[in-house]
Length: 267
Image (cartoon, rainbow, N blue to C red; front, side, top):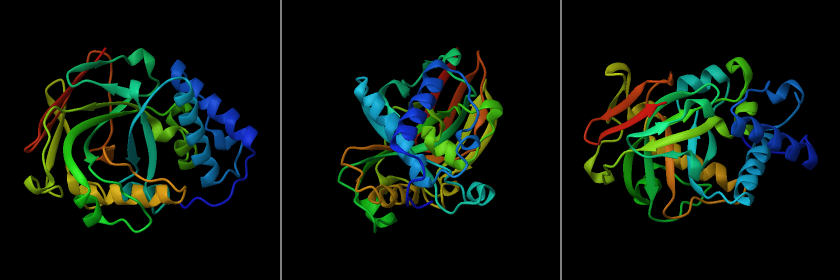
């Protein structure tokens, strides 16, 4: 999924950024953008995402973190790619532990359990590996992400997803933190509950074999744009569980071995 050249013009990229951000902000669906632009490149897709990010910053929003998606080997094989994708997290995406997700603001919301890292030093690609990530990690904490594709009938391809900020919508972080030395991130387990019933479970190994590998890939992908992961960055690694559809009235809890739990209410 390396970024190479553009097929779209700057004007087209900006128009598509406005189009997708409008769908996100208004909770409406649109058809996938590759229907109209079948020859768009990976660089086009990320350029659209970065243009959406610039629009949010211009509107006064803060960028509060980064996220990785498609961090399951099986899912990558299914989608015909060999690298995960990344997106950004804006301030209004954040929901406090035990808080509320307002479903009317979203389109096709699904929730998944994740692990988040907070860095204490810069991660600069292109040669970042797991050991480098672990050495640059301040702490980890439990999290849940609400993904919400804006594409009609949940039908899309990966370039359209990348342009749509990898379906980022909301995220919830737990109150417990832990140092890397106190956890085995590969075997760290989680159960995802909806209304008290366990609907999914997984371990850290579901994230590329080791969650830190997702962070390393992110640093190396950002290097293609001359970007780094700054010290103090909050990064969500990708899903430990399958994404589960949520509905109004649902109470969702992710219960982690050694990291407590994270709760959110869907209203």
